[in-house]
Image (cartoon, rainbow, N blue to C red; front, side, top):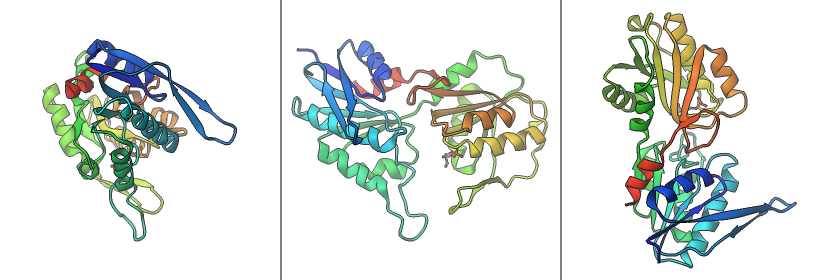
Length: 291
Ligand code: R5P
């Protein structure tokens, strides 16, 4: 019997294969069929053995990927008493509190559902908030992709680089990133309208930006609004090249086009969400959290 079986959910098959290969474990593929009414049917293509690791990211379509994840975890539990749910991108983690009266804290429901489905441990990568992590009702571990992202930037020859967080909430991430790279960092002041979602950069001027290459660091890029506004500000301050870097590149709608139009040279992200920007692999950090 193998020590582990890695099951690759439909949203994370390639990452799951990498994890299985690092663990030298059995890999089980899932077949997904979507019926005309929108219901999903998932079939495990082999029998899992030993401790089971289910890898399934919850990026758009978020609700489908969530139900797929829960279904696989539930089935895995019928084969093993130990089922680790690896959720590289934890959807709903931004709904960890009530911003306006009446809003539902959906992250709490997601947490209940993983427990009910039978997960015995959860591993996430750069979850949006510690509050969301704490809402999980079973042992959970959050791993940071910052070191892996920094390795990518160490290979580039940048001109007097400056790490920039588009908001104060990301200051610790920017500090950590900058320390690992051995450069300076700043955090801009961002305001987001809670009703419309519109983003504004409140910082008016920054003297230390002129001529320097910028690494704009965030946990995720969704609509691209935060990065667009930050890049426009940095360009006004006459920065050098701007790289936008994040763990999770959701890149909804025209996000990528708008970010490039705002003056960003390149978007760099990890394979928690597979796309053409996901050039940084997180399989090694996930494996470290498993063993
Ligand atoms: C906000 O707190 C997050 O860290 C990101 O800055 C935000 O979710 C990015 O969203 P968007 O790309 O839509 O501005």
